[in-house]
Image (cartoon, rainbow, N blue to C red; front, side, top):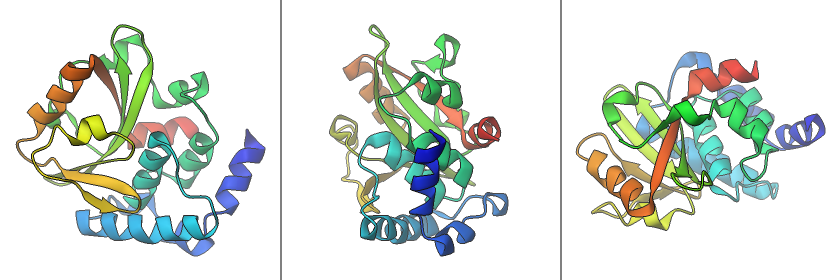
Length: 195
């Protein structure tokens, strides 16, 4: 695992790594989008762009200035929602919720969606909180996109929905239509878990 992490982190240009300082706080929504584009191009030029939804969520968390480089290194090597991934995310039976209320998203973080009957993880998204602004960032989740009345913006290979106001029901519809619950992991807690 450490070898995979070292290989992946060495593929992220150092000038981008230095520009991402979690201690500076979350990026504005416009800076998130700009960072997503720039970062994706840099990763793509190295043939290291994210491919699956949870890699896109981690990519967005780094671009949003909320996930640490160490969190990225630890998570990018995980595959298929491994037990280590779940442990780092703090996913357990008690962390699941079947009701989405954006007021409970107090800081940026990761939403992992799970089938409520089988326990199979099905999708992952990043939520970006900056003041009253709340953005939902994901990829490979068309069943989520269709729940919104407007098409998402596309930045850095991912879809971005502004869910700052009036979108709770759209996400709730996604949960109910697909028999899902979700696990919300705050970025700060994830950063603490990886050290």
